[in-house]
Length: 312
Image 1 (tube, rainbow, N blue to C red):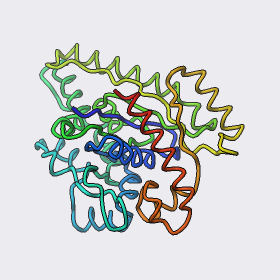
Image 2: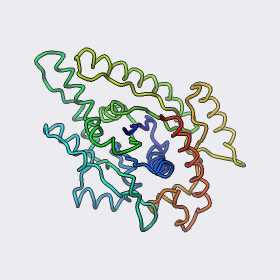
Image 3: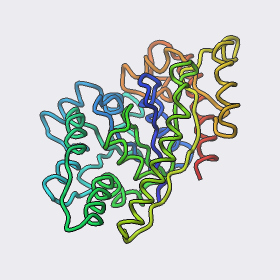
C-alpha cells in the first residue's frame, strides 16, 4: 500500500512544488517503484512544472482532461468518481523526448480556489447531529476516497498542498500518512513551524473525536509528522552560509529529531531546468547552468535517500 505524504507550509515561496516534483522523480529513480504526485494548489505550480504552462492550458482548457476539480465537482453532484480517469500517466519529462513511465500525476485547476469556498459553506443535513458529523467526515474524505482507489498501485503518493488550512488542505491531511514541512532557512519561513505542528495535532484530535462521536465504521488513523526539509539554502564553500546555518541549527534544536540532515541548495540549475520542463536530474540536456543542476541533482538524491529512511 502506497504511503501518502503531504508537503505543507502556510508560507508561500518555500519551493513546495519544486520539492514535490524532484522528490517524486528521486523516489522513482531510487526505488524503481511507481510514484503518484498530486497538485492541490489552485496556483497550479506543480502542474506547470510538469507540463509547461502552454501545454497545461491546452490539456485542461482545450482538451478538457480531468483534474482535481472534477473530484470535488462530483462530490457536489453526488456522483462517484473513477480514480483512473483522474490519474494521468506520462506527464513528467525525463528528457526533451521522453517521459517517466512510472510517475503519474493528478493535475490541479485554478477553480479550486472557488471550490474551497464552496466546500467551506456546504453542510449536508442529517436526521441528527451524529449524521451531520458523518457528513462532515465525508466532506473531509473526498480526496481520501479517490486515493484509496489508486494508492495500492504506488509506493509513494506526494501531495503538494496550498499555503493555507482550508478544506482542500484538510482533505490532504485527512488522506495522509505523514506530513512534511519544507522551509527556507529564514525567519519568515521557519517561524510558523510550531504553529503548523500544533494545528496538525489539533486536526488529528478533532478528526479522531469526530470519528468516535459519529460511530464511524473505520477508525481515524493519525497523520504523523515526517519532518522538516530545508530548501533553497545558500551555500559558501560547500556549507550553508552563516545566516542560513544559524537558522537551521535553531530549528534543529527546537524540533529535535525532526529536521532532515540533507538539504537542497539555492541555485539557478533548478530554474533553468524548470524553464524547459525538466527536473535537475536531466542536467545533461540543459544548455546552461548544467554544473549547478548536476550539483543540485546530487543533493536531491541524498535527500531522497534520507526521505526513504524516515518515511517508513
